[in-house]
Structures are given as structure tokens and as C-alpha cells.
Length: 398
Image 1 (cartoon, one colour):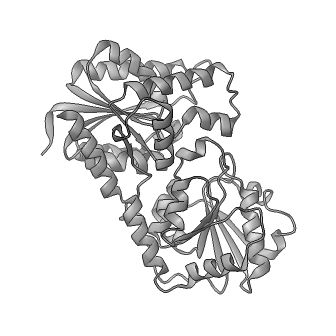
Image 2 (cartoon, rainbow, N blue to C red):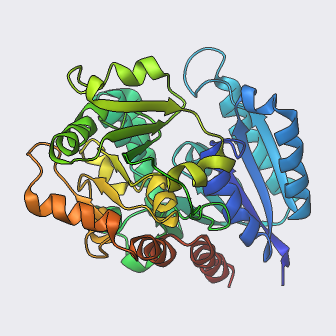
């Protein structure tokens, strides 16, 4: 039964019209809205808002789920001239909702919405969930070269410390990051919940009967730079190309160009493989992922990666496909190797005979696909993730 006496304010700078925002914000809110009245603030990209067909579909969905969607156009970042309107909307919209609604709980996704929390705390009483999603300032240092001496890095690290200390519950993606938080802050482990990047099995499931025409299809999904090292990943491709009898078909699903991907592949490898680069709409992702024999990637290793759990892991396992990647944190090692649904590889040394045999076994075993799905269901179920959020909401409302 829905609790109408008190309402939830959910703030996300990520737009729900983006694939990531849709899967990691809206899909949870669908379930949460059955029990709670949700007021959602999101910042949508101009190009997404121009897609009127999709916009109207989401407006209708919000109406059906009784989600009050306050959407604002995102103006290319939170720093620089002309960007202050983002900050203004981020501050004024929550105050307006507090004045007009009975808000008992604020749920913020990542760090940027945390800017408004000191103001709200000074004006109103409410419970707070800090849904970290990662060590954001350190991600900017590791990936975008923010200096640790810069004002913006210091500001967001102080904001991080403030939010961790004033929150009634913290949500993070990995046990590795939970351990770091408990070791560095005066926080009890029970106030931190680990909820990974969950997946909707109605959207991501195996499509049977796809032929690979005799080639081994090595899949790659998403960005080929920033947090990822595509050239290192190509070392795995090169190893498999030289050790296996099958020809190699490298299928890269990304919104980046063919030429950009091609320039990251070692020149001596290019004529030895068949390269396919394309953008795929979300509705067709399951079919494309199901055509892979395996998914591979290399995530750059640094401090912030302790809090990362890319959505591609859940989506790929749900489609019954094993994964080869580096051991970027303890969580991924436990998920892939302990459950026998993937291989942890350092991408520096030549692949060993034992690793090669294990990799072939992961691909060829008759029950490989069902085992991958079972682990996706165990570790990344949207239903279970939503239930965990509902438990937090219920606990904080009592």
C-alpha cells in the first residue's frame, strides 16, 4: 500500500531519458512508486528533450506510476559562464517541493545533488539517503586529471565527507567501497547498503539461435576511452587470434566512430581480424550481446575503481555471455571467478594454456549460458535491488 502521508524527493543530475539514467534511476522508481509517492528532479540533455516521441512515452509512464517528474534542461556542466542556471534549478526546485509537499525523505544520486543538502538541512527536517555511485571527485582526478590541489577537487571531497556524516543511509555499488568508507569515516557498516548496478531481465535476456558463421565473436560494449583502455583490451584479442584456430570477429557496440576505434587497434592486428563497429539502440542490445562468444574490457586501475561496477557486467551475464576483464576490484573477482562465469586476466602477460582452456570451457560448456544468467539473477536482479531500496525507505520512515 502506498504511503500518501509523506513523500520522497529523488534528485538526479543524470537524465532518465539517457540509457544509464533510465536503467539506474527510472527502473528502480517504477518499483518504489508502488509504495511511495515519488517527486523526481532530473536534468535532461537538450538532444534528448528534442526526442518528443520518447519524451511523451516517459511522461505517460511517470503519470502511470504516479511519479511527479520535474525535468530541467541540462546546460553542459556545472562550471563556467552560463551554467549557473543548473545550480539555481538544483537549489530552488527542491525548496519549492518541500514547501508544497510533505517530504520526509530525500534520496540523492551521486555528489552534485548534494550541493543543495546543507541549505535544505537548514530549512527543513528530513531523512537523507546518499546514493554515492562511486568516489566522484576521485573519478575526476583519475579519469579527467583534476588536480588534488584544485579548488573543485577539494570542494567535492569536503562535500563527500559532509554527506557521509549527515546521511541516514549510504548506498554504494561495491563491498570494496563500503570497506573504504567504514575504515575512513566514523560510520557503522549497518548504515551502508551495497546495491550494485541491477538489470531488468525483461529487457536483458538471451536471444537464442544466432549464428556466428564459424568465427569467434569477441564483444566490446561502450566507451573505448576515458575510464577504459581499449588498446590493452586488444592485447587479449591479439593473444586469442594467435592461439586459436577460429577466425576472430571483433564486434564493438559504441556510439564512437569506426575510425576512432580503428586507430586504437595495433596496426599489425587490423588485417588479422574482422572488425565491426556500430551503435545499437537499447531495444536491440540483448540480441547483439547474445551474439557474442565473450565480452572483454580493461578498466583502468586506480583508487576510484574500488567503487565501480559497470552496468555492462549485469547486462552481459543476463544474456548468458561470459566475461574476460582485469581484476579492478575485489567484487568483480568474486563475481566472475568464484561463480565460474568469467576470467580475470592482467592484459600484460601472454595468456597461459590453463587460462586458454578455461576460456574455451566458459564458451563451449552446454550450461554456460544458464549459469551466467543464474549469477546475474543472484547478484544483479532489479527486483532484489528495488526490494533493498524499499527496505531502506521503510526503515527510515518508521
